[in-house]
Image (tube, rainbow, N blue to C red; front, side, top):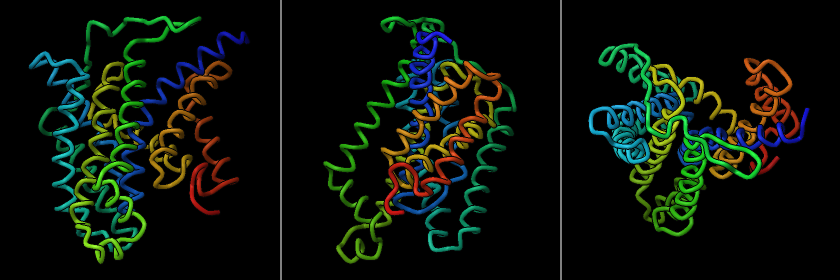
Length: 289
C-alpha cells in the first residue's frame, strides 16, 4: 500500500469526520447540560437536510445559506420540543426519557413521510463534482466546505461557552442545576437555548451533508449512530471531545476501506469504539475514571 494512498485516505477521513462532528457536537452539548440522550437527534439533522433541499429548489438558496436557514428553523422547533416534551421528563427515569425522545423521533420521521412522501431526494449544485487540490491530493469541494464549516461552528461554540454570559450560565447549569438556580440563573431558558443549539447544529450538518448524501426520511439514523459513538469516544458531554471523536471515526472508516471491503468500514469504527470503552469507559477526554 502506497503512503500517498494512505495519506489521501486520512485527508478524506478528516473531511467526512467534520460532518460527523457537526452532528456529534450538538448531541454532546445536550447530554452535557441536560443529561438527556436525544434519540431524535438524527431526525433533526434530516429536517436540516430537507430545509436546505427545499430552500435550494424553491428559492435557489445555496446549501451554505440554506444551512443558516435550517439552523434557525430547527432551533425554533427544538425549543418547542424542549418546552413541550423534554422539560417534562428531565427528572424522569432513564427509560422514560429514552421512550419520550424515541417518540419524538417517530413523530418527526413518519410525519415527514406522511407529508412529503418516502422519496429520496438529491441536491445538485454547480460545485457538486468540483475538486480542489490540496498539495499532493485533490478533495471534493463539498466535503472541504463541510470541514471548514465544522471548524467555524466549533469556534463559535467555544466563544459562546467561554466568552458570553449565556455560556457561563450553560456551564454552571451543567455542573449543578440546583446551585445554578440558587445563583439566579434561569435554568429553563438555559435548557431552551441548549436544546435549540444542539439540534440546530445537527441541522446545519444535515444541510451540508445533503451536498453529497441522498436525502430521505431515515437518513438521520446512520448519522445519529455515528454521533453517539463520537460522543462516547470524546467523553460524555464534552463538545470538543465529540468533535475529535467525529474526526477519529471519519479517519478510521476511510483508512480501513483501503484494506478491507468498503462496506465493512463501519465495523472497524465500531470495534474501535468497543476497544476505547474497554480501556477508558469515560472516553478520551471524559472526566474521572
